[in-house]
Length: 518
Image (tube, rainbow, N blue to C red):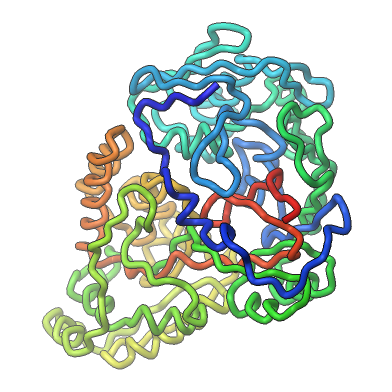
């Protein structure tokens, strides 16, 4: 009944590093018994599509993980894996993974027992080219290298890859893209399945209402360990201050908040606030194609003119740790010797003079959020000192995220953004390959060497060799001077003192079924 991973080490030790704040006694402002069997949690984005292949982000994914099962899943509050729907999972070669399902796992709404045919359908509908007229799954890249899934029996099958994929267990099989849907239900309900999902997990989706959120109810037919709470209300509250008031009044039991909002809650009786390392990555990017930023000396000068530590004080009250490279510790491929760039005004001016760049005027695009606006204002003042005048262009979500798409991205000069991470280096690197220019690679960073290293790292199953490839890829990024790394953010977890929340390290991927009474 144990998972047999031949390569193996799936980020052992990540749990201890990422969940240190919850492992010991948290600071409590008061204690009480759990008053009920239902809890309310806050999400910043409105849940939309509860289908693994077409989800719109972590807010959907956190619901999907408990509505469906996977072959394997993350242990509560850990980066390590354990069996879920599979009784056995074995990687028998670099390109072949065999599985055997536990019998008797039933889909809701009368759609019958989970079989290997459902596994094949679930994985191939995301990972393979869809039939003509069917929209490709946005997360197809999670299944990079998938060739086919073979059904060898009612409960057994074989995942066949065209090439090795070192991140497949973390990114796909054990995560949202590995959730197993009912083939019959998807084919019968069509797009209705997005909001009326049929799963076999610990919860069912009782309701989904736009601009309000969702309600999850315990699934009586679930064959695994029963969740502690019979109902979870997932409430969409976009405003941080409104969330703070709901926590104070008792209307909410759990939320993740920025430091300036969460810190005052430490003094509220009955609430616990703890800081957890984040798994987002936040940076200031420079468009390598746009003059004068196409001159590496100008990019180097900007990097030296900025003071990352000052920017983080302004954006996060100094609570967010500094990031000096793409891959954070303890993810495989972290580069501990990455340069720590300190402000050097004289050298920045020298580089600008050498490049003949005088009286520069640049635009800095940022999200219309306090942390980004505050960091942008500090960056503007710092760059002014070396002769660069900066206009800050703060945009709301829709306008910001569409700015770098297609040909419009050619006009971006500087920008500050945040991406969500996973516990795999290739997941973090994938947005910077040349093929992502015009999509998510807003630096327009085109490096054949980086692209080659990315592909090699994705297929390298030896951890030591993969680490070397990932570090070299980060060195190539650093040499471009197109990235000013800022922070991995910090997650401030605010919750009832009687509640013990659960998440994969990074606090983006919550585990509702593992929330429990402390």
